[in-house]
Image (tube, rainbow, N blue to C red; front, side, top):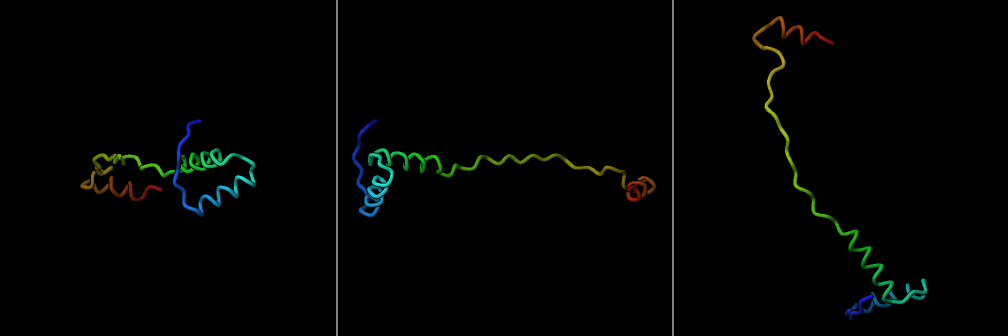
Length: 75
């Protein structure tokens, strides 16, 4: 495991130490687990929206009155 130095807020460090006491794990392991979880839960950027469309036409000849009534009367 790589080593590094972090400047932590005092309140955060107190919470990490309390967790270390509860879980009986090294401070670095607890910090690493929490950071890994936070990075995985990071919201992902939404993907590109692809708009699909096609030309629309009447499904019946609107000038043909009989055909129009046949469609309207169909159940």
